[in-house]
Image (tube, rainbow, N blue to C red; front, side):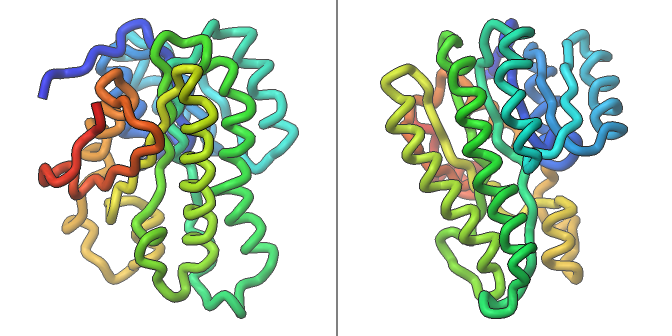
Length: 247
C-alpha cells in the first residue's frame, strides 16, 4: 500500500496516551501530521509529546477527562482559538465498564460507562464539528467493538454504550456528510491492550495484534481514500482482504 501523506494536517485523538490511540498518534506524526492528543494521564501525554517532537512534528496536549462536561464545553472554544481547522478526529477513548448481568450492574457504573463511551463522544461531535467543517477533506473515525453484533452475556453496559455510539456515528454521517465530513466506524477486534487484558486475564496477549497494527487502517479511514458514509470496518476482515475502505 502506498504510504499516506498527512503533511500539514491536524489530527485530534482521544485516549492518545496508550494503546490504539497512542499507536495512531505516532503513525499520523510519522506521516507528517501535527497531533492534538487528549487523555487523562498527563505524564503519559508528555512522553507521547517527546516522541512526536523527536519526529519534528507538533503535539498539543490536553490532559482532561472526557466525562468532565465543563471541560468538554470549553474544548471547541479553546481549540478554535489555536487552530483554523481539524482535519480528522479519532474518537478512540473508552472504558470496559462492569462485566455483570444487566440485573446486577450498579447504576453508578452503568452511568459512567455510557457517559464515557457514548455521551462524551456526543460532546466531542458538538464541539469539534465546526472545526471539521473548515477542513478541506474532514474525517471522523469512531472506535467501536465486535460485541455490538455478538451481544455477549455480561457485557451489557459496554455493548449498549458502543451500540449507541455506532448509531450516533451513522446518524452524524448523514447529517455532516453534505458538509464534506466523512464518518467511519472501526472495530479493531481483540487487540493487545490493557482493556483486553482486564476482560480476559487468562489470555495470552502475544496471540493478539499489537495496537500499532491497527494504525494503518485508521490512517486510511482518515484519508481521502475513505469516501463512505458511516461505513463499519472490521480490522480482521480488512487485514485478510475480506473488507476494504470504501472509496
